[in-house]
Image 1 (cartoon, rainbow, N blue to C red):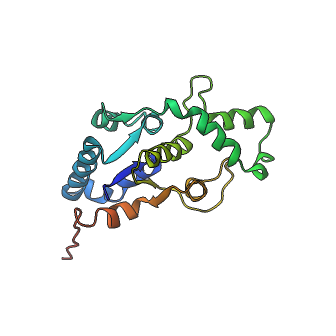
Image 2: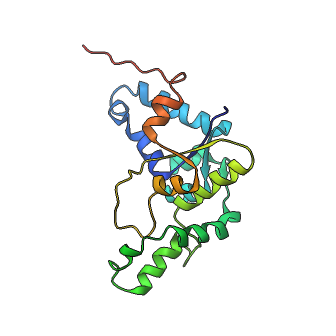
Image 3: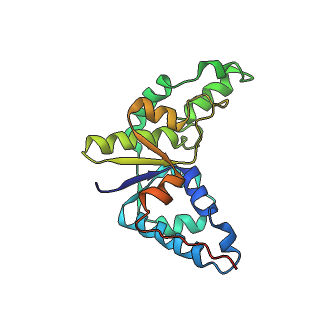
Length: 189
């Protein structure tokens, strides 16, 4: 199977945090991991969608590295609107101070509101579904737990289960999907 990795914002952040200790020392592991990640993005094996790029807006170095490799999801807005309705957590709606705030937050999951781009989560899932329709086998890598929180929309792993999209944590990507390419050793002095 050809690897097609679609990666969430939280997974990108966690990817570079795994070896942050090395970044402050000799930078050997960190630099190799950095190069590995962006080589995979440039080859198209790791896919970054436009919504993830926008969520990482302040990471200028990241945007520079992925320039020209970001996938547009504009064509998925209608599908995402359906997911918003399907995966709303109605019990959490009562925690909002007013209806306007709740509606604005729900709108951020799908369409742009007041110039603010929509959250990436549902677009990632819809993009994976689109890849499956094209005969590919995408894996959505994310940094979310399955623990319930106060979100208005269910979390990525739970929605992926419902939509039959493979979802894995970032550790799975590093230590399972790329175990033949990433070899780690620990030296104790």
